[in-house]
Length: 207
Image (cartoon, rainbow, N blue to C red):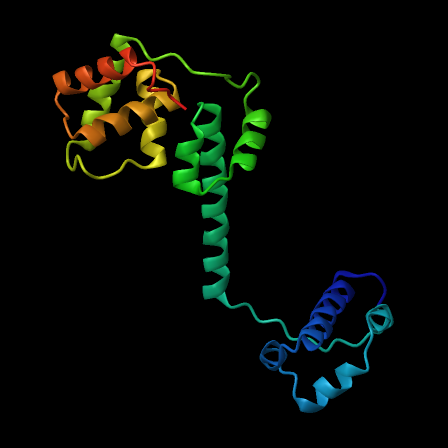
């Protein structure tokens, strides 16, 4: 049979079966149609036997695709890809650690690694507060996003959209909207007052 894709498949499946037996996972073996006698014969097989079996012309496998599980797996993979791409976009936009931990459970080590990888010049120290025009633009955009339900938390995608719409850094978007939401005042005057108070207070540092 030689080194063919069929030989590779047989070796991979039988290697999996041997590992299942070593782990005591008889349920997995039964799912592959291994009966008591086949399982007992499998006990005498070693990993070194797999290349010998692969060289034979016999084929003992029947492959059957479970379409429901297949599409579920692909959908999960797509969600994982989308989540990773979103994390990269947020980091590039200077998302703070608190935000990444809240939405994705990112550890400080992983957050630091991503920042070093994705941002050519990571910010150090306290970032500047956005100017008044940017704060007002952010407030207007935030109000539009939350007008249907002011108490509903924004999604990571919505935070990214706010940053793009207003030109404010992601950490400014995160911290200002958090302040406004905590104060519960969605009026223009209320937002401006909260922003001014925190900007004048050196103890309130954007992290």
